Amino acid sequence: MTSTASHSATPPHGRPGPGGASGAPAPEGALPEGTLPEGTLPAGAGPWSVRSVESGRGRAAMELYQYGELTDVVVAARLAPHLLRGARHCPSAGRSRHVLAWGRLAADGAAPAVVFTGRRPFRRVRSTAEVVTVAGRFWLAWAQGPFDAVRVEHPAGGTAERLPLERVRGRGAA
Image (cartoon, rainbow, N blue to C red; front, side, top):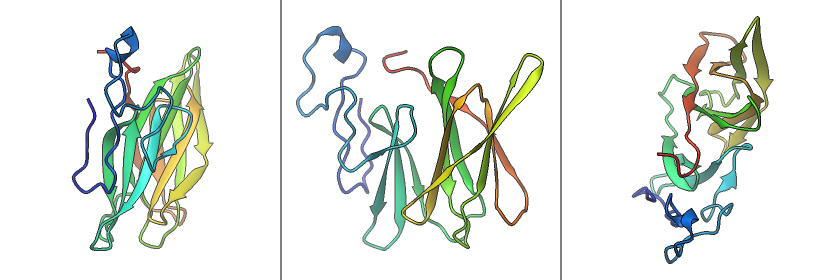
């Protein structure tokens, strides 16, 4: 199933669903495996991609896609105090995971400090992620490792925001 955002200038194209890998013909307009919906850019090493859109009223938005399907839309808002919008993880090779966090930039335009954290037997794991800005209003950060949570903080200090990473099932998993 492919989701379409009503405000989207170019809706995402269909991709083969769980039945598409079984040898059944792909639906008309479906993209080949590994191809992104039109106008999107890859986000990290996992199944994610993003697209920046601008409405007629001048409000920017960032669309987040997962396996080519619209997963989240973040709209620029000057009054929103929260920097962290969402965080996910999906399986990678071995015990590792691909992880992604995203949100809005602070009102002053500063990118937040993003740290992914996790626990393993007898030790804690943490990694400071590189933050990439999107359209001057949003940010993305990704990493690979045994992480299960993310912490985001404005560089000037203040209250840190934390979220557990939401699990993403593999493509075709029920």
